[in-house]
Length: 177
Image (cartoon, rainbow, N blue to C red; front, side):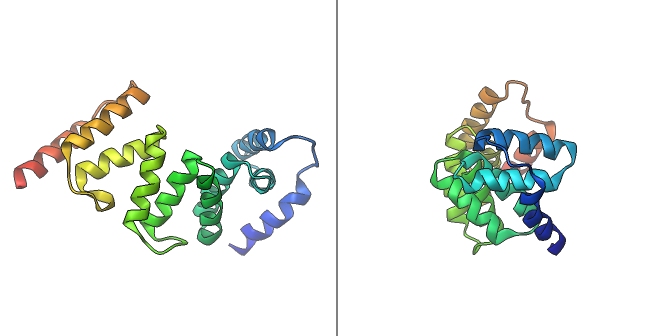
């Protein structure tokens, strides 16, 4: 972790000063990340995030969450979510669901994930569908609502097909009641 934080701090020095805006910095950060240059990508995301660019704030939250820098990840997710960014809302919801960087709170998790799902954020839509199928996020099992979220998922991802395992899990749960 200390090496990661040192790399983040030094990343500002490693990234050439450009006159690009935060959207361009974020795009370049994704390219650097894809090339495997974590130091350069973190510097660019941090620069764009500090300028208030919500997509960069959410992405920086993702990276920091993976690096177990949970408190800082929550800060960036919170900033992105405050701007109505679906990725930030989803990330913040996940942190509440896991109790990482914040006290575990299923109600707050559900609230933030629902906001992201209502904005058609694919991962959030899937999570809401699964939560209603399984009773996750503190929700009661409700197959009608799960089907509504599944219909939204299909509209967002026309190639989606329910796997036989999901269908058999549903029938097993119904049979056990």
